[in-house]
Length: 275
Image 1 (tube, one colour):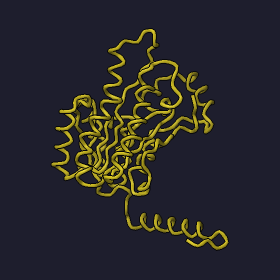
Image 2: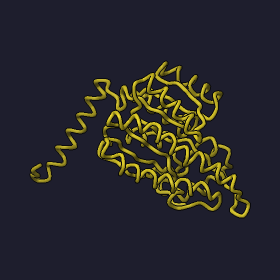
Image 3: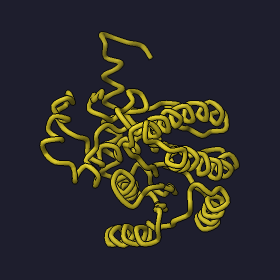
Image 4: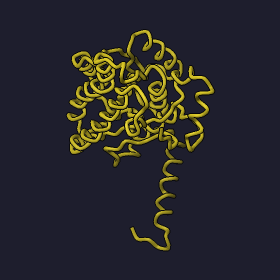
C-alpha cells in the first residue's frame, strides 16, 4: 500500500470505522450463527462470556458442574435469548463423558465453531499443608478438563477445516501467587497447551488463544472485605478491579473474525496488575 504523507494508515482506519458502523446499522453481529461451547458457563466470567456471545448472535451451549446450576443460568438467559442457549453438565475430567456431550452437540447443530475452556477451580492452601489429592483435584479440572474438551471438539473442527479454541489462563500463570501452588501451576500448563496446540492445529484452520484475567469482581471477590480489596486495587495501575464483562469482551474479540490472524497468544486482561 503506497504511503503519501502518512495517509495510508488513516485511510485504512477510515475504512475499518465505516465498515463497523455499516455493520452495526445493518444489524450484523460478530458471532452471528456461530455455535459455541463455554465450560464453567453458569457464573462469573463464564456466564458473562455466554451472554456476550449470545448478544453477538451465537448459539451457546454452556457447561456447568451440576444440573441445578446449569438450569438456573439457562433459565435467566432464555428470558432474553430464547432457544439460542442450552445447558449441559458433563464431568469434564472424564473424556468419555465429554466426548459423548460434544458428539451430541455436533449432531444437533452440525458443528462447533468456538470452544471456550473456562471451567476451573482455585484455592489457597499453604504448601506445607498440601496433599497429593488436593493437587490432583485442581489439575483434573484446570488442565485435564481443558485437554478433554479440546481433544473432543478438535476432531470436529479438523474435519470442518475451521474453528476457534479459547482457554482461560490467569495473571498468576506468569507471576505466581503466595499460596495454593496447584492453581498457578495449572494455568502455566494452560499457557503451554495453548501455544503448542496453536502451532499444531494452525495448518488445519484452527486458531487457539488464551485470556489471562487479573483480579476480577466475581462471586468469590464479593465476599472479600473492603479493607482487603482496597489495597489490592491500589496496586493496579488502572485503579479498579476487572469486571467479568471485561474478560468476556476479550473472548468475543478472539472468537470473531476480527482476530482471524491471531493465534498462540495469551492476552492479559488485568489492568496491568502484577501481583
